[in-house]
Length: 330
Image 1 (cartoon, helix red, strand yellow):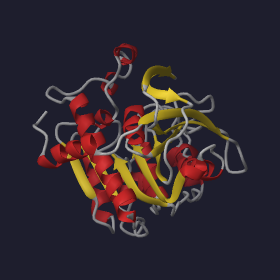
Image 2: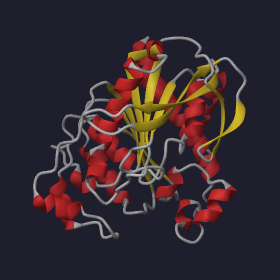
Image 3: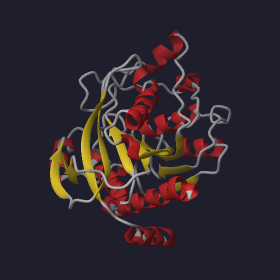
């Protein structure tokens, strides 16, 4: 991988001098209600205890389970995984953000998580329901989580990858035009998106004005986000794109979306990267499980250092979120 840019070195320097806590960790369940089923998730938050390595849902995490929270008026960041993902995918990023004073909530989307018994990714509801999942999770964190009073409700951010990124665009005001998908229907077994689009209007996706900044990583569906459909987006956006794409995501998707945004995005195309390089480096155990069916999840193109990239990725996300959720409110 290329030598890190000056901006990245500065971000890493800032990371080293910011006040630090440890990451507390609590597993949570958002109760089912009239808007959807129960949602499993995890919350990372500032904690004074020394972190230890623990196993949670097949992930090796560095955190302290159920540690008392430290401090108050913390920004909240919600995280949305890609298709088949889980709340643990970005645990290292969540731990780092908690170390620096953020509260981070990540969930398993019921219709699209690899750990969900009702997963149905071929139903368009698995896309449409995602923003409501996040909005309900924000409600839970602010009003029902045990330490919700320690959150500053005016400082909510979002991070999403792939389908989670598509979800994030909707949450901050975008309205996708599903009819554009009819020109390029998904063809994987069990997908019914185009059949459902042809059968009648698709329900609108939830917007949530509480989100004040969004990190969007390699969203699919560029043609669906027209200039008009993105016209209500007004919050700061950090947009990450892979240079080579993959899994149905094209580099053109990012270019279309960023061009049509009414706000100037902090736009970053990651040299030599593929779509799945936005997933953290795989453990040896997970890489062995995917080598036959989905080797692209863990295999990088020659010359791409996924571990080094994620250090940069995490540091730059921290800098962006601090700028728009912390410094902007001081």
